[in-house]
Length: 236
Image (cartoon, rainbow, N blue to C red; front, side, top):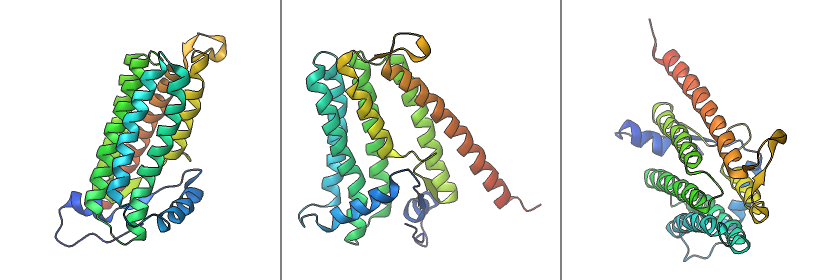
């Protein structure tokens, strides 16, 4: 949804309040309709803050559940899937509920959502590293690459008023599904032999692939935004 910046706001505040959200993931259309349907039927006592809190707590649950998979995979894996579903419900529905009820707080919502995203991703990767199913170094590298993409995205939102929520048909929901599918592999040991090599931890392979993709996204978006800003502001 696109709104107009509030007159007198600083650049960062204006971008947060008036940015255009670009969400073109594979499931975006179906997801949007489902979220609006649920928001219209949500009990009156539930508000966006409740859902945001659920999103944060459930990501802590994802991290703790991944940690548990190291010793009790048949308990930890179902909990990972349940917590990911709860995170989708809280994190995806909070903004939709605010829009449906016309109770939007653009700057507060923008800030809170992304603080929760950063904390939640760190907790998930920490849980994976503690579980033994992901090498701590790979977890740290994956987190660093993800933070690079997030930082560029925040700068792009401030500078150009466009917040990119997906890339190559992948967004947060599709990534949750991939993580859940990976978790289902863990009771069997969580090892893979890509191209006959290995065995390696599935989440090490996934983390390195994700890192490569995140770095590519960072470079592409940085070049694209820098070029667009150069064209917009060069007049000589």
